[in-house]
Image (cartoon, rainbow, N blue to C red):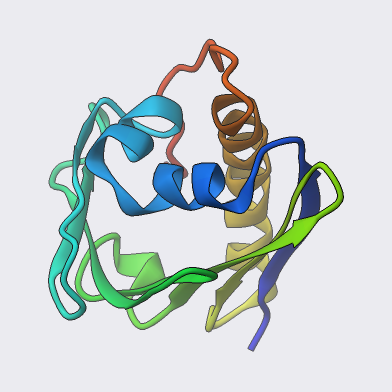
Length: 142
C-alpha cells in the first residue's frame, strides 16, 4: 500500500508544533476554520471544509509529547482506514517533523492526497513559527 511521506524542519520548538496538531485553535490556525479537536485518545477529531458534504472524522489514536496519530473512520471515503501520523523531534533551534499518511489502496490516490498535504505542511510550518500562514481552506475532494 502506498504512503504519503514528508520530513521537514521547523524553526519552532516541538511543543509549538504539537500544539498546532493537538488543539482546536492549532488546527484552525493552519488547516481549517471549522474544527473540533478532543484531548482524549479514542475520541474523534472533526475537521470541516466548505466543499465537503460532512466533517472528516479522524479517531485520535495517539497524542503524547512526540506523536499525534489519527485513523480515518468513515469520511472522506478515499481515506477510510488510513492513518495520519506526525512525529515531532527536537533539533538545534527547532523541530523536525516526520509525517506519514499510510494505507491508501492505490498510488494514484496517494499522489493526489500528497499534493494537498504538501500545501498543508507549508501552512503548518508558517503557523508554528508564529507567522500568519495566509491560508485558504485546502482539501483534496474532487
